[in-house]
Image 1 (spheres, protein in one colour):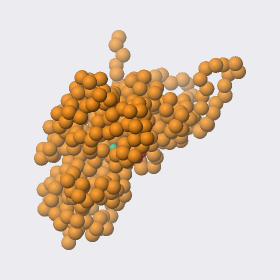
Image 2 (cartoon, protein in one colour; image 1 turned 45 degrees about the vertical axis):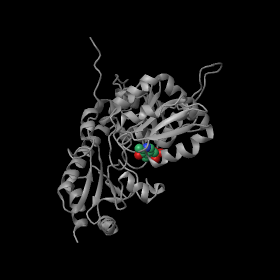
Image 3 (cartoon, rainbow, N blue to C red; image 1 turned 135 degrees about the vertical axis):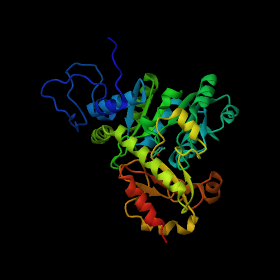
Image 4 (cartoon, rainbow, N blue to C red; image 1 turned 60 degrees about the vertical axis):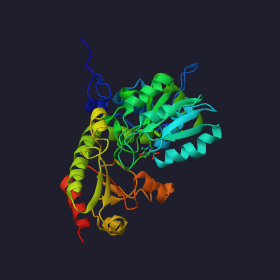
Length: 384
Ligand SMILES: *Cc1c(COP(=O)(O)O)cnc(C)c1O
């Protein structure tokens, strides 16, 4: 008999199902212990929570690896920690990295200010044009970094052509898929070598924990783990327990995020109060076809531009009652923010305009409330 691979909803709850012993707790206990007893005379690796081998950390990583279709995974203290360690694991002093130019602001600062310490140079390219990836390659190019879908325009990068270039030149492909979550998109299935995620977002989903994860081959994850131990980036066991608790509902939450965002985007695109709506689930979105081809869902994030642009935005935000004005994303509650004050603050107004993010642009993280209530809140804030 062949063993059946369980579906993603099942994995998010159980990991790989196995028969439980009698009288076992249904919920795995939190083991808030930094260290563990050691057999006298044993030369086996010790258990120590900075090593990422506390049972809560191990269970969570195994579950996430299953969801990403990876050989292995490791959780670290934040999404930024995951991005930093993944790159340190792959790059050597003097190396060259090719990165998408549309990436999280923190990642951009990491590349610009920290990688140069190791004499690592970075070239930024338009991620939706496969030809420019090839043209950017140099002798010392070792890796390619892509984020998809992108913030806040929800551009979807077709990973197939990028992976082809990476394979051809023997480059490592690293992909931050935070905005999709492994329910909507699994980078490894499309040629990535390492999947990076901010667990702060959809994996946990309740806006109460900071964490990050990397998934990929045994070799690469082992190197990230080695660096995590030395650079002191382990996830606290309590945070691991909370993220695992959040992950049990990942599949249903993401399905609802997808549905709500689709409904909000369709409603907003018909409403005269909005000048533009950016959502890959809309046929009018530039990357609708790419998203349909590679993703299982279009996600919970919507970019909105008001008809009266920057002039109405303060009044609009102050009138919202249900939707919370706060940065970050992917929690059960709807959040709205202005990239000019948050993720794209350091970019400057001209560069933002060039990127297609005019001042007054709003980024909505659709929560899992009743969608009629989300729409009613937006509607009443538009009146006047
Ligand atoms: C939030 C975010 C990060 C950083 O994650 P933290 O958990 O805040 O460190 C990285 N990439 C993307 C796409 C994000 O949205």
